[in-house]
Length: 292
Image 1 (cartoon, one colour):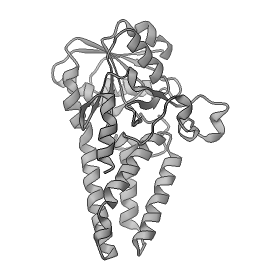
Image 2 (spheres, rainbow, N blue to C red; image 1 turned 90 degrees about the horizontal axis):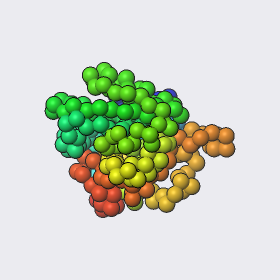
Image 3 (cartoon, one colour; image 1 turned 180 degrees about the vertical axis):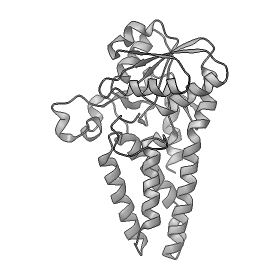
Image 4 (cartoon, rainbow, N blue to C red; image 1 turned 120 degrees about the vertical axis):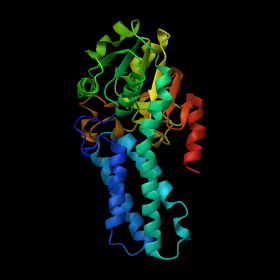
């Protein structure tokens, strides 16, 4: 879930990670480098700039890392630089097209988890959660949505606007009202900025406490996330999240609230991804496959 004041422009409604990958493809296409070493340096430099400028650092970082891993695999087999560049562009576009389709695939996989007359609690804004809810409604499911305002940047208000535009009724609630309303909902559904090796998730601040409350009241807690958000991190607690990712700037770490938190895998029922429906313990195996 990207912050509302995202620096990366998103005119097509794509996730920040996908927009970042598109920009890396532009770097490859427009580069004046004459060697693979120089081109690789330019790509890494652009990646660093994109991560530093974007508030949703985890998703951009993981998406760019997987993209670089995918496009550079076997590229050294090419003898000529232009052949290498052409291969990088070809593989990059293939990766991008797969990423474009991930949201629709997740919606198709996840819609059956929503039964008719289901009440759902959603935290903040997530385009992939929105797409899944749209799919459920298109399949004739009647649903009732509560959305937390996510008052660190009010992205819940944006989510409600998206739902309204899709013809889905919803009610905006205070973040502090999540516990009060938990007994009234059938399930919780959230997105993720990053899915850690442990099967836990890094997401908008407030996700952790909602997951704890859902667990206490035996409510299913579903995470909806694209596989390009799988990240090679293994946090054990909130302090394990780097300040560069927890805060909008390093200087604000002392005076500001963190923008993300970590939800351990023990609070997560299932992860609905484009790779299929996963238990938290299955994430590490999928990460190994992604980085092989």
